Picture 1 (cartoon, rainbow, N blue to C red):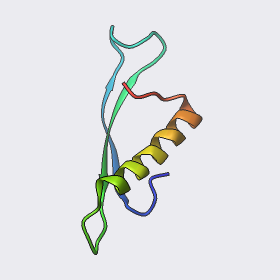
Picture 2 (picture 1 turned 180 degrees about the vertical axis):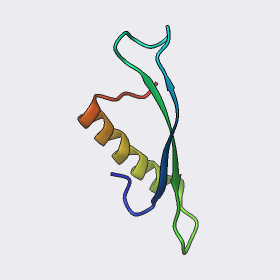
Picture 3 (picture 1 turned 90 degrees about the horizontal axis):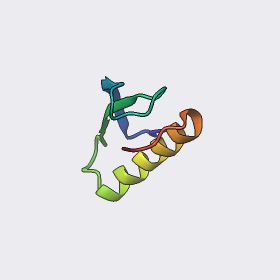
Length: 65
């Protein structure tokens, strides 16, 4: 879902405490976008991020906190 500009995606934290609804967990991701030939614009990375977010929402019911 991240497209060709997404170089890495890492989970760096998983939280299942009091601030998260029962049966759910908070997963923090580190996403690295890169183009070899130029600097990416905010518009490009936002578009790629939105595709990832929509896929996670559709496949896993994920929401942003």
